[in-house]
Image 1: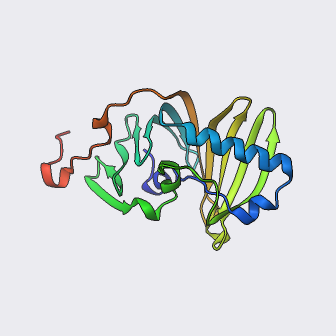
Image 2 (image 1 turned 90 degrees about the horizontal axis):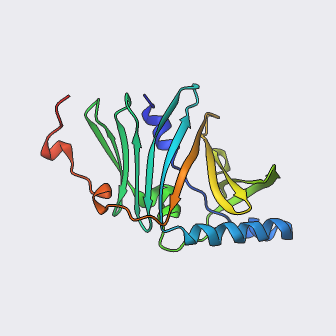
Amino acid sequence: MASRRSFFLLPLAIAWGRAARAALPPADREIVARIEAWLQGVTTLRARFTQLAPDGRMSTGRVFIHRPGRLRFDYDPPSRVQLIATDWRLIFVDWAARQVNVLPLSQTPLAFLLDEKVQLSGELEVRRVQRRAGEVALEVVRAKEPDQGRVVMVFAEQPIELRRWAVTDPQGLTTTLLIEEPEYGVPLDPALFRFRDPQIFGWPEG
């Protein structure tokens, strides 16, 4: 089962500092603009994922994104963990432990990924753009808190498509998530993003 710590790390997103972008070579600025345009064009996403936790444990599941503001991660059995972003909330549910934790979505990097308008500029900065074997990797940190960890997102370059990301926390522990079998622009049932709090309505048996 994925740990709660690893689970909160895996869906972190990236923003990009204006000053940092200005310092990039022209070719890197061009690819950043292309990635920004591609992300802006993503309205929905349905995909499988494989997560590699810092301790080497592997788990799988499904991810659903509906911009703006909605996201859901479901882990495959035997894990009974779920993450739902809806309205202003980021909700973590551990069905096995019967625990629910709620964070303001605006206080998490997920806000970028789910914004109505994707802008790769603002409070974070790029540390590196790397190209290798048809892929582009963007390494990003918070401009004012670079010691609080980093995120690397890896995209296919031709055509642009998100393939995986890796989040390294302040302790140096890295959680990697691979996107598999992605489907973009597909209809998603609004019920996927509705949260019925089991602390109010009761926990399911078993």
